[in-house]
Image (cartoon, rainbow, N blue to C red; front, side, top):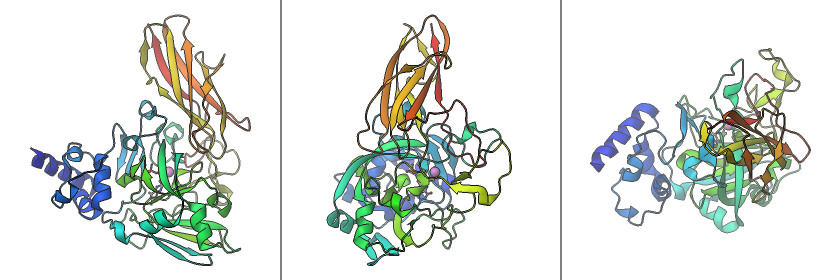
Length: 420
Ligand SMILES: Nc1nc2c(c(=O)[nH]1)N[C@H]1C(S)=C(S)[C@@H](COP(=O)(O)O)O[C@H]1N2
Ligand SMILES: [Mo]
């Protein structure tokens, strides 16, 4: 039985992922990645025959092993989002953290051989093993919110090309790692350092090893923020293979694309980084408002920096049926580099608002949890809308400012409620 499950799993993966063969991944992946697939340490892992998929993982015959309840938007590359009601936890469990891949994740990871190179505009280029990172730098744990720049793209009209994310390309796991700033300081930034350039070991979708799947970066001022991590654990366990094991950047508050997965190099640049998906119109928006469908010249696009204020109702699930006219509404709010100062809720399409209880973030750059009890005057169909305000007074809009690539959609989230 288990053997059949295993074979079925491998076949399904092969046919969906082509060259990204999960068997190969397991073969080379080693202890940590196999344990991540089942979300536990495996005491007798040394006895597991080579190439064996643990039965707990084999039972799930999708490309999303070790993920639970995610909606698959694309299987090549794998892109999957989390329905809002599965994001209700204050800290997003690993199996509920979205996956956004631009290329083909690495399949042959040798933890002992893994190196992170820091080079470019530094006094002392570094080549650090995973053990060096743990032993030479202070290890910190932070809950950090990560959102894809294209989250909400599905609601743009006219449609923008790319993954049609609705609400769930966002999460807030607890990451363990070392501060990016500490590592850059150890290398010694030269006065000529202006930008980082991040590299990971995933392959370009074409399989061409000369090409990068994605290589983005941030200005040095952002890179030196003490809340950026070079992370080796997610929620106290090895990082999920699809979320960048064994090493990734977490640069919270900016588009998720700045948080390089499978991180193996940070090239400190003397100019704005020009890696894959840094240039052209990638992760850029027009510098001025444009009409839906309007053509915008390339030079009029600016690189997205901080993500805008946003909130998500995570309980109840949209479509809920309420018997007693009272409902506890709960969710999370975040605001890029800023913090959220209030979340307001309406049940009458924005005519009146009540202020929800809003918690401080667990640490800077964690999302903030809100909750409030709402009462409905009579039976019928209602919508609950949430609107977050950041600490400079900027609020989420009712509807979105269109842009050609479908980024930064922070319109208010709304859920349907039937009161019986
Ligand atoms: N190496 C590498 N890093 C990457 C990506 C990628 O495709 N390859 N995708 C980026 C994008 S666009 C986002 S939104 C986040 C998503 O992180 P997650 O898949 O862990 O949720 O990873 C970023 N880091
Ligand atoms: Mo992204």
